[in-house]
Image: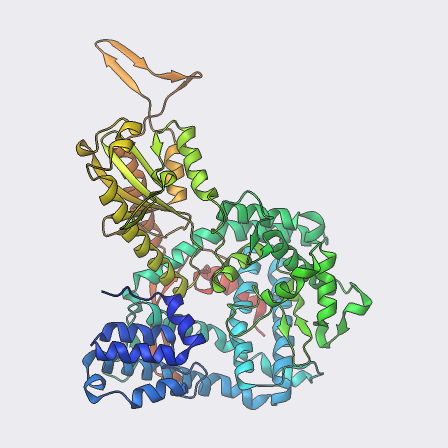
Length: 636
C-alpha cells in the first residue's frame, strides 16, 4: 500500500503544482479512497472561502467538482464533506455580513488600513497604561498579546480586499470607527479554531433540528490537550518576561538597558532546542542573528514610544507615532545590531508579515505599497523573541532540532550521571537490504528493557502543528517497531545483551519515544509510550528510595560519596511516566469547562473548551476576574 502523504507534502504540491494535486485527487476517486480524498480536500482548505463570499472561489476545486462522477458525488462520505464545507462557507459569510461589512461601510477604502493600525496601536497603549501600571503585569501581557494575535487576521483581510496599504493622514472618526473591529475579532478567532479543527482532526459541524449550526468540539480531546500543552510550555516563560517588563517600566527604564535581551533569548532557545551554540546556522543564518533582528525592532519601537529620535534619517513620522522605514534604513538598523549585511535581506523577509504569517508578534514588519516598512511600536516593543523564532521556524518548516545530536547527548548524559547502563545501537549504523536500523537508545531497569527513539520536534502551537506532531509520532512509532523486531531477533541481540548484561528473552520489552514536546497528556501510540524529556529526566533526578540489603538483623545501605544510592525500578518508572502523567493531565482537564456561545446573528451555537486558570497566552484561558477587571478599566 502506498504511504499516506503528510500535511506538508500535500500543502507543497498544492502550492507549487496545482494540476498535480488535482490529478492526485482524481486518482484517489478512481481507486475508491474516499477517506483519503476528503483528507486531502480538508487539509488543502480549497472548499471554503475564508473571506466571506459564501462559496469556494478556487477555480481548480470548482472544476474538479464539476468533473466528478455522480457515483462519487453521491457517496455518503463525500456528501457529508460537502455539507460541512457549505456550513463553514455560511459561517464565514455571515461573519462578514454581520461584522466586517459593518465597519467597511463606516470607513472609506483609502482610510481602512491606516485607521485600523492607529486604532490598534492606541488600543495596545491603553492596555499597557490601564493594566501594567495598576500592578497587573500578567493581565497586561495576556491582553496585549490577544489584541495582536486577533488583529493580524484583519490585516490579512485588508490585503485580500486590496485596500490601499499606504501612509496617509486619517480623520479621528475613521479611527474611532475602526475600533469596531475589536468587537468581533474574538469571534473570528473561535471560528478559525473550529475550521482548523475540521481541517486537521475529527471535528463535525451540522445543523440542529432547530436550524442552529452545532459542532462536536467537546469530543475533540486533541484541542483540549493542545491548550494544556501550550499553557505548560509558555506560562513560566511569559510570566518571567511580564514581570521583568513591569518592574523595569515602573523604574521608567528600558528593558534593553536592564536585561540581556540576546542572552535571555539564547538561554531559552538552548533549552528548547538543546543547542550549545547559538552561532549555529538555520536556513543559512546564525541563530543569534534572528534574535538580534528582533532586538533591532524592539529598540526602534521602544525609542519611538519614549518619543526619542533613534536616527533622524531613519524615521518618517506618521499619524499617532507609527514607524515608517525604507528598506535601506531597516538594513542599517540590523547592521548596527551586529548582523552581517549578507544576512539582512533574508532576515527582513523573515520578519515581514504576509498571508502565511501566524501573527504580527512573529512578523512585526508590514510592507507597504511603496516597498517601505511599517512598525507598530506597541507590537515591536514585545520583549520576547525566543518563542517567536520557534513558531516562525515551524511555519517555514525550518527544523530547530536538525543540527547535531545535542538532544540525544543530553539524554545520554542523564543516564551516565545516574550510572544507568545503556546502549546506542545507532552508533553502529546497521544497514542491510531491508534498510537501516539506527536505534537511538536501549537501557534496562530490573526485568524490563526499553527501546527508545529520541526525537526533537517543534512544539505544536496550533491545530495544524498538532496534526504534524501526530504524523511525527506515527512515523517514529513505525520506525521503532522495525528496530525492536530487528534487535530482539535472536540473530541480532547478542551485542546488546553483552553490554547490558541481560538476556532479552527473560525481559519485558517496552517501546518509548522521548521527545522535548510537552504533550499535555499521556500518549500510548499502538504500544509505544510517548514521553516528554521533562518527565523522563525528572524521574532520574528524583531520589527513589535507597538500596537496602536485609540479611537477618543486619541492614546494609549502599553508599557512594557519603550518599545513599537511589533505586530505579521498572515499577517506579512506570508510575512516573504513565500513572503520574495521567493523573496530572486529568487534574489539568478539571480546570477546563465546556462553554456554549450562541451567536444569534449567525444562528451558530459553539461548544468550546475554556480554561479557567490564569495564563497570558490564550484569550480562552484568562481568569474571569482578570477579564472583568480589564473590561471595567478599558470599556469605552
